[in-house]
Length: 105
Image 1 (cartoon, rainbow, N blue to C red):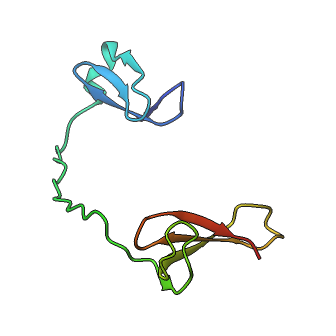
Image 2 (cartoon, rainbow, N blue to C red; image 1 turned 135 degrees about the horizontal axis):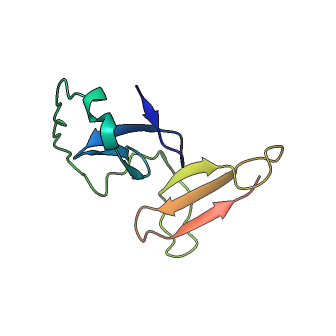
C-alpha cells in the first residue's frame, strides 16, 4: 500500500521503521504495518563532476560609447522590465570598465 504525506501529498517511503516524506520530511510510525513494506532495490545516486567556468562572456557585443569611461565596445542583452505590452529594455555592459547602463526604446 502506498502512503502519502498528510502535509504535502507526496509519497512517503519506509525508513528505519518509520514512513518518511521524500519532500517535506514529515515522519510517522509504521506500527504493525512493517510487513507491508519490503526494500526491493537500493539505487545510489550517481555523482557528476561539474566544471564551473567564471567570467565567460557569451553575450553579443556592439560599438557604443560607455558613459563612464568612453570605451567603444559593450556587451548587450534585452530584458522585459515593464508590462508585456511595452518594449523590452536594452542593457549594456562596458567591456573595459564593467559599467552597466540601460536604454529604452
